[in-house]
Image 1 (cartoon, one colour):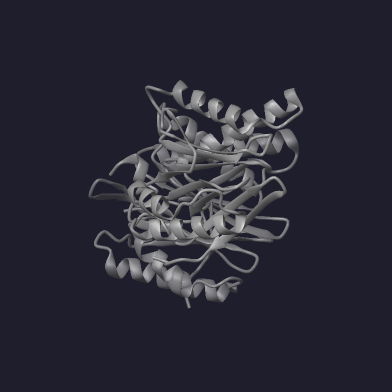
Image 2 (cartoon, chains in turn red, brown):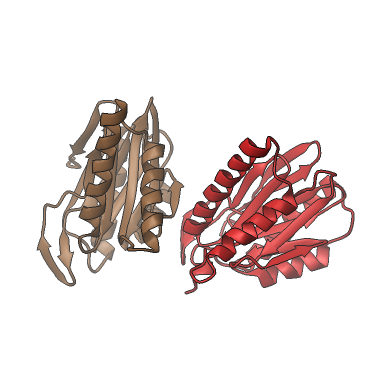
Length: 204
Length: 193
């Protein structure tokens, strides 16, 4: 069936004015069977950095544990959080290490640089970086996510506007994907802190 | 075909599994216990073909015992589930185990049930199942399971799950064994009314 769409999922990250949003759906499935409806695919690394992982859940869990480990080690050595761009490069290296036996995951990295500049980047399963000014998407049906994001995205959205946009894009994007959906979770990262909200959409 | 299910109730976790050992279309033996009672108040049910089920669960059980001996206390349910996931994940790209598990237990009054599949996907759930029977049981869980069920209500749900599998699955197992773990430890429960 394709290892990338075995468990299903959809992730969007979008930039705003001095803020970023990252959102994922909540479905965990085994091909056509839905196993759980409370499975987040976003992982917090530090206050201004959240990683979303789309793809095979076993590799998603292994990778998120490895990211946490590497960041903890960095924190112990450097006595500060890793900046987003540095973290993204680290993720890219970690994935390319497994070039001929990869992790079946596509990460989305969203955060704020130390000076407050929004940063979003998507990657493929072997670490090819695709940094974007506006938004990045990943999951079992990226075409539908690209479509809605391209239509509704505007520059310089405030955190509230960004939340509305990302929430609507995610919910309508995953509606066209039978393997993703069952609600969503949206994190808005600002220099003041992160606000997370759960969405209820079509529960099918 | 193997079938394993589990769900949480008020202060207990109930887990049931079929008791058949099969090779292709032949039922070699019945009366197999597929739910291990490991380290203190924990149930570890496993289904899978070949020797993987037994080899893997015995390996995990040995490590649970080792931890208890070294540290004087048994490993928590959460830690057990994550250890199992770690072993499955490491083995996945070397010599994978074809074993699907459910780990349920009690830790200081808190009940928890973890679903682990053969790819090392881990998720904490209230109700979970493996096998072809799971396809029927998930829908029964959706309609019949509620939080804080009593033992009697749980037995009713378990009876319904088993009855549905026997009714609708062509290769339904004839016999199931159901266990629970609560503050008094692990024991077999009879579903007789």
